[in-house]
Length: 459
Image (cartoon, rainbow, N blue to C red; front, top):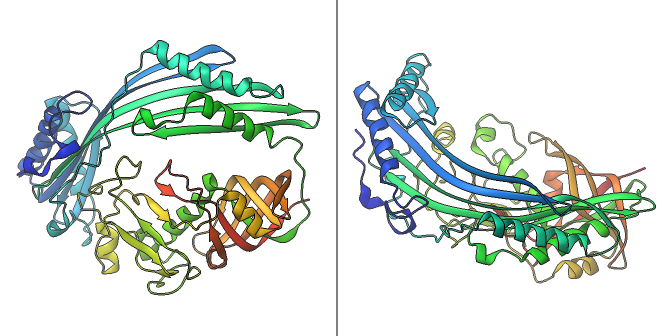
C-alpha cells in the first residue's frame, strides 16, 4: 500500500544526513504503519513521523538556572475507510506499538460517520520535486559554551544602565529535527531542519515603578544570530524606554504597530480567510475573493521557498506542493488559505496550506520606523499587545496595548494601560504605510504598519 517513492527525497530532504545522520529508520516506521493500515482494510492512509533533539540553558542574575537536553519523537497516522477517518499517535516506535496505533486509528474510523470531503490530497497536487531550502545547519555548543553565551547576553543587558535592576534571565537554545510525511498514494517527503535562539528579558526601575521588556534572535543557522551583546543591549533599551509611562485620555488617533507586533494583524487576516472559518460562514471576509479589502498600495504574498527562512516548506502537511502566490494584490483579495478538506467543502482547490501559511509577507515601503513616525506626525506607537479581543465573525477588534505617544513625528513619552479598538475591515482599508523595518524572525514577515483613525481608549 505504501508504494513510497524514495526518489521524491532530495537535497536537505534526502534519506541521509540530518540530526542522527540517517533518516532511513524513520522511513521504515512510516512504511510499516502504512502497510499495516492496508492489511487492516484501510482504503487510503497517511503517516507523519518526526524525531528531534536539542538543548537549552538559562542564566539569571549571573547564576546558571537551568540546563536541559531533550530528545523527542512521534508518529501520527490517519486512516480512511471510504470517507470515514480515524487518527492516532504514539511516541513508541516499536513494531508492537506501531501496530497498536494503526489498530486504534482503524477502530476510530469504523465508529465515525461518513464525510464525503474526507481523504488524502489529490494525487496531482502532491509535490514531485522537493528543493533544498537550506534549513539544516547543526550547531552543538558545549554546555560551558552555551552558559557563556547566555551570561554574556545577560551581562550586556544588566550593564547597559544602572536602572536595569533585575533580570528574568537570558537563554540559549539549539534544536535539530527530521520530519517525514508519507501517504498511500506513493508520496514521501522528508525535511531536516534546525532552529537556534538567544533571548533575554530584564526589568528597569525608576521612582515611578518598574517596567519589563525582552528581545530575542532566532535563526536556522547559528552564524546568523545577533550577538549576545546585541540581544542584551536591545532588551535593556526596550525596558528602559518604557519607564515613567502615562495613561492617555480616550481619543481617535493614527496608530503605528511596531514590526514585532504588526504581524498579528496579518494573522487576523489569515484567520478570516482560513477554510474552516469560510465553510462555517464564521468570517467577516466571506465571499470577498476579487474584492478590495486593503488600500490599493498593499500586497501580501507567500514565499514558501526562501532559503533558511523559518516558514519555508517545499510541501505542506498533506504533501501538497507549495508555491509563491499573492494573497492580496493591489489591495484585492486573491485567494484563501485552504487545506484539502476545506477546499472540497467550498468546491475549490487546496492552496497548499495544510498546517498554515509559509513566510507570509506584506510588501514594505521605503520608510523606516523613524520615517513612519515623521509621516504620522501625531499618534500612538504600539510596542506591546495584551489580550485577544478579536472577533473573526464581525471583525471587531479591541486589545490592550502599551507603547509611546508621538507628536511632531517624535516619541514624547511612554504610555500604558490603554486599549486600541476598531473593526478589522476598516483597519485593513486604513493602512497608510508599511515600514522597511521588516521583522523576519517568524512565519509572518512585516514591517511596522501605520493605520489611520483608530480609537485609543485610556483613562
